[in-house]
Image (cartoon, rainbow, N blue to C red; front, top):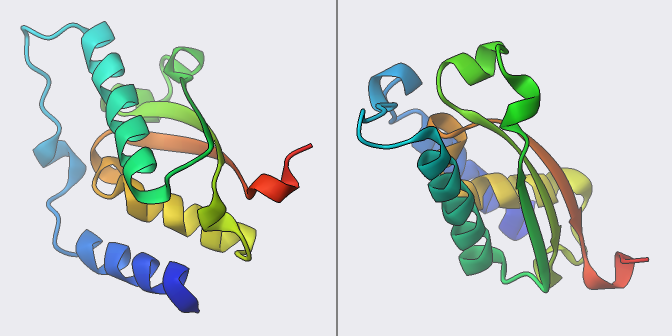
Length: 126
C-alpha cells in the first residue's frame, strides 16, 4: 500500500481514540460564524501546505450552499479543495484522498462535514 496506506492506517487508528463530535464541538458566544469560517479555511490550508507542499492550493467554503442540511446543523462545514502536489505523483485517486484526510487529521471529525476533492500531480494539469 505504500506511504499513503500507512498514513491512512494511522489516521484510522486515531479515529478510534476520539470522543464523539458533539462532545468536542463548542462554539463560543464571543466568536462570530465568519471568524470560525476564516479560522477553518486557514487551518485547512495550513495543514495541507505543511504536509503536501502543493504547487497550487485552492480551499473554498461552500457551507452557505448547505444551510439547513444535517451536516450544517452541528456546526461543521462543507468545503472544496483543489490541490496540485508532487505528493500525488504515482498515487491512485483513493490514495490521494487518503493523504488529504490524513493531513487534515481531526478536522475531519470536528470541523468538516463534507469535502469535495480535486487532487492532481503537476503533470496532470491541463
